[in-house]
Length: 120
Image 1 (cartoon, rainbow, N blue to C red):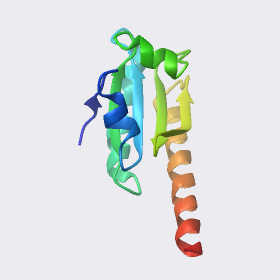
Image 2: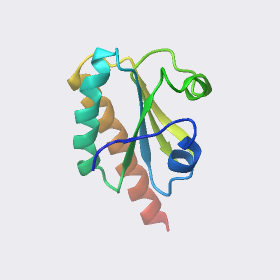
Image 3: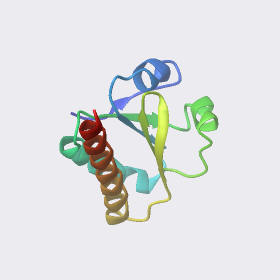
């Protein structure tokens, strides 16, 4: 599965109303480091503990979303569950930096869900 592009018009329905966890990749065509995020996110999508959707937002064309999520740098990645931003990744400097941050979120997700399933 690949990234799905969303805009201000369909963001609420596609992202915030999603039944599962999502990553939102805010990027711009001129942003060089934004280009390295896409293939890494796509590879993590297959490894994620549960089905994960990835959405792509062109920040230059979606000013309202950029302002709503107070973007200060690109790329910015938001991990959203049940309409709530749980994690934010900004200013990564390399592929390894991004991989490390994604892995930390995945590990936290696995731990939280293991705890929830035990206490249920």
